[in-house]
Length: 150
Image (cartoon, rainbow, N blue to C red; front, side, top):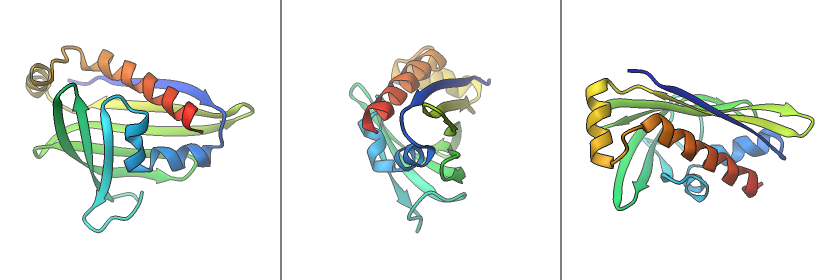
């Protein structure tokens, strides 16, 4: 099973300013409707390829944690990571930035790494039948929040 979603928005900020926000794990909860933040773990102190962090998430009264590994960390260009939960691959997430005359075009992307059985089970557990549509709406909200934060 593979779903890939991209949402793009131009934000009135430099690519470096956007990168600083999206790689600031504790602040992600300020603009994401599902991710409530994160913290660097296993001696990691910041965004670097291979660094790990624990993400916290909530959907209604349901809360869960994930472990992520940074796969891209180029300031002003891209911040991306792979997510696992309970030792299983969940998804790839990230942000890419391109400078424009109006600021920065930010593309927020998601790639579902779950197999169809796990996708169905997690959908039932969280009450989200269509994760792709759910994530698209959340990603749009996240970019709106980022735009407001700069």
